[in-house]
Amino acid sequence: MTVTDPKHWLYHRTPRQWLTLGRQELERGRAAFSQRDRKGALTCCRRAAGMALNGVLATQSVPDLAYGQTYMDHVLALQSDLGVPERVRSAAQLLVQTPLPGASIVVLRTIGSDERIVEATRDVLAHCYAMVIKSEPDPDDSDEALQPSE
Image 1: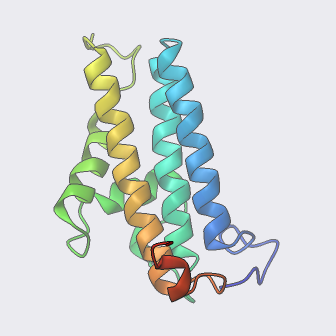
Image 2: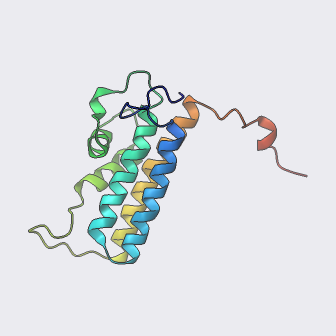
């Protein structure tokens, strides 16, 4: 789908632009983890997943109302969407259920747990990328480009 309404919350960007924004947000999240800003990192990862999901929703002429309009609404809906692979639902569940640091509960975090958040976000982004590509193949892609070079 092309940009049809620059004032619309979803259609003011193309699906591929939403994917790009999601990847950029994930990189901000990774940078925040490396600086031990876990609250900022988790927020960026959730936002990255939501942006990528906007890309999927933007391929639809009428967006799935179950996914709501906010990035967090999207991730919440994804965790229970039986139409997506279990790994993607589990990734969304991890993003939703991981508590933000600074809450009344003290959560011990490790580099490994931080990497699981990043990997979960990557799983959601990979799923979204596949869905967008499936719905609107790039006209520049051709079968010839997929052939090994000699």
